[in-house]
Length: 419
Image (cartoon, rainbow, N blue to C red):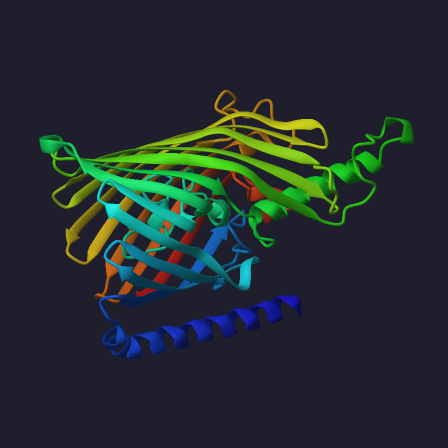
């Protein structure tokens, strides 16, 4: 009965999404007429299908699911040539992730008196890698999912934007090209339905249960006797990014981004923190080269972090990740992509031999994927892709409480509308 009910709800959402897509398409030209030079409204909606084998991916995807819906609506108002305000509302249904909730993706005041200097204040998109700031635009991305080693979908709600202030600008380097920068300071948030918070809850419950099974004289007094709730708060966050567009080698873009962050964990509404995670340094090095109808992209990432929980170190050391992707556009509206993507939970233990929380293969994830993108017209785009995976790192245990397989695969298809 439960499975039938989930299927019924999934079908209702699919029908709702289809109706919304049709409604947007029928009124897109009318809405465009209402826009002015100083006030603009744009939006997007997409409906997808996700199916995986052996492991669930981001949802209960084994056997297939239509619970793969995104809707966004954004507005921008120019108060002056140098001053504008804007924001975006976002709805996502991806299994139990952000289910039936509307959130504020970003909302900011943007003041730029000079090309080389501007200020952004509010909830501002975080400049991590080449694509984090436009990760939700299907029309700008060749595949449905960005490479997960750098743009982990389970961390989207935390690393999409920062709450604070940023300084940015761009300047010319003469005949060498142009360079842009973005420096920021603030904090981030952890929504109550985020995968990160749910994974943290799983870990806390497991430790409390394990502690309670020990003899009283061997139990750790730092752990509570029961679990009620968990909360994670952002303490310190700052970073920056540089992006260079070469005029010497046409089509070449080089980027570097950095992030430092500290998060504190509180269990059972205690005023005393139960754990802490410090990202000593997260950096991403990026390169993109466009030549004729080919685009070559590669990014490299390391994240050095330390995590403690109930007075014990649970994770210490840097991750390592990289990917390479080739996009080929033989015709104006068709793009074919090939991706290879690697992630290691610990750079110095790629074989997972020191991992005690699970099988060694939960310490890495290697992804080979292929995809196709069809830009139907100025408003519609359709995509499909398939991935073969070795390894089960990156929050996979949360979606697979009954165990993980080393070798698995997943496919996805999605159609999107934007105006």
